[in-house]
Length: 98
Image (cartoon, rainbow, N blue to C red):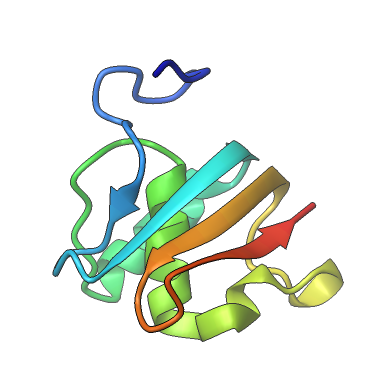
C-alpha cells in the first residue's frame, strides 16, 4: 500500500498509535499547526514516535475525546483532513472531516 507522504515520509506509516498502543488513528490530510500542537502535547507529557502531523491527532483525542474534532473557534487544530479512530471500544469509526 502506498500513501501520499509530505511530512515524515520514512516514519509516518499509518495507523499511528498512542504511547500504550491502545488507540490508533489514520488521517488523510494535513494539520497545518501540528508543530505548535506537538509542543503543547509534549509539555503535557505525551511522547511522540514519529515526526508526522497525524500523531498529534492521537494525543489530542486522548486529552479531549471526540471534542478534539470540533469545528470553528473551538477547534484546537488548523488543517484539512479526514480521520478515523482504529481500536478502542468502538472498533473502527470515522471521527472528523473538514
